[in-house]
Length: 440
Image 1 (cartoon, one colour):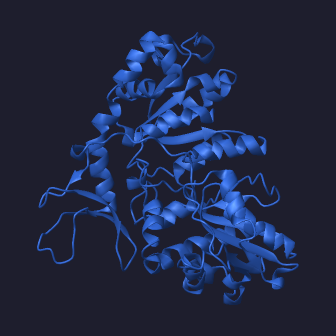
Image 2 (cartoon, one colour):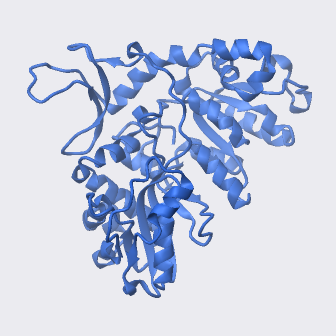
Image 3 (cartoon, one colour):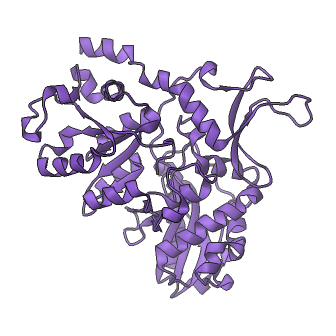
């Protein structure tokens, strides 16, 4: 799901990952070269003749330090290509390279085998590339728009923001993420959630919707009801007994119950002939408040939610779809799975609106690199319409009836403008990396 790309002009291929499969690299090059610019990048800088490449074809790490901090290599590769980050995709087979690509807001495709062990697969999902592809045919499919890596991100975005139109899409994917605590209950994930401290947040419609739903859940009910309905179909193929949710603490608004109650009106709920009676948020309850989990580590979260939930005996022998909003450590989701199992549920299919990948460090953007408002001295930030829930860019200083005609941009135009302002910063070589590399 290339959420920051307006179009694709070029690919950076991490050639180190293909040293043991030169034939696959040849096939990839033959597939991509007629349509896209290609540049190759390497951490090692060793002989490339087995890959039918010369040293002039490859941008290599110039110091030992750059082998670990790969951003400058990718910056030089983008500059050599003559394109921009907002038109460039990074292709690799090693998930460890993805963080550097995410720092530069590149599109990302990871080639991997689905047969990897659950722990290794979980590490891949902690980096969350835009697409996971297994072979050349998968690569063709994702570039044609026949499949989206994260169907929930497409449904959450305003119309026209992505490279592909809905008519081109043959199927939506809700990737299956391993659950190490309950291995028989892997989690279907609708998309990713980037917090406001992550530079990817302001480009990401689903993250904006999730954050703003905490203050105004009603405005997001229609969108999330569609998103959940499609996810239920992907996760179960329509074969289940009931849909419930991870209940909120009694002191908080039960947003997920609100989204579930809106599902009978969702087009995707009706098109799959789901029964409204299958929506049963009351199957799980949270009788008492438990501590806020935000600042806790995994062990503390697990302890805090132990015994916090109860399940209705009606779940016995049934296939339950369990919906949650954002999965970070999975503590609350897994505690709900535990109590459903204890109550006799025959099968549990977890579905989350979004999974929280590793957060990137701030890119250190100055006010000048934000979108200026113009009528006032502030800047535009990601917001959501209080009635429709649609994301847009509006002034951070906007106040109702303040008499100022603050600037406004649609989400699509805001992303274009923001990328244009950020690209010189993204492509500027990190001098600290350069100096540390020389003394490494």
